[in-house]
Amino acid sequence: MEGAGLVDCHLYQQPGRVLLHLVNLTGAGYVPMEESVAVGPLQIALKLPDGMGATTATTRVAGESLPVTCVNGWAKLELPALLDHEIIVIE
Image (cartoon, rainbow, N blue to C red; front, side, top):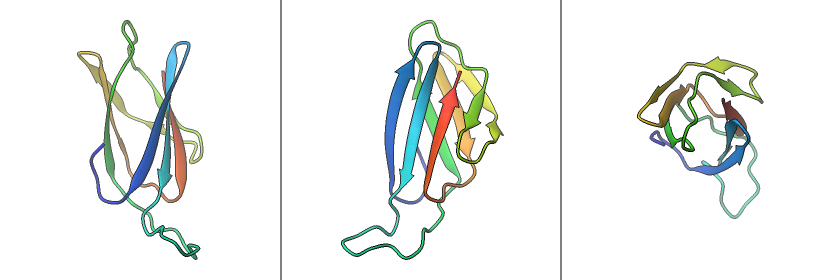
């Protein structure tokens, strides 16, 4: 992933899809955060499981579809903005 900010990423695999869970930690420290600072755009490239192609990418929190391209087993997409957290489902 490329882009400004501190983002925690976890990738999960389910039959026929992968899920990328993102948490924006920008501005997080030892004191409670009073407001989230949005980051983005984020350029994302994921190595897909063997035999899987990517045709759709959907954000579950924002409820938007993202354009995704699949080249040589890699899914590439751009997340315009991340406020606090997001789950991107790639199928």
